[in-house]
Figure 1 (cartoon, rainbow, N blue to C red):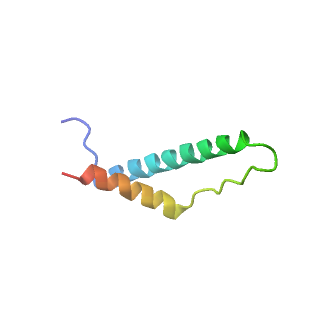
Figure 2 (cartoon, rainbow, N blue to C red; figure 1 turned 45 degrees about the vertical axis):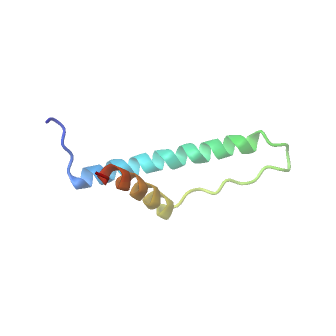
Length: 66
């Protein structure tokens, strides 16, 4: 059984995945705004820590599901 991770390492990985997911989401939203006509574009709000934690928790629930 090679690469077992402890709980802290799993949480750290999930935080990284959550940040990656939110980065991609914001990049997609930003790209969609760029293709809109001038004057109709809206500012994309950055994600915050709470959103990262919520996304990581969702991932953790999936991983811990039996």
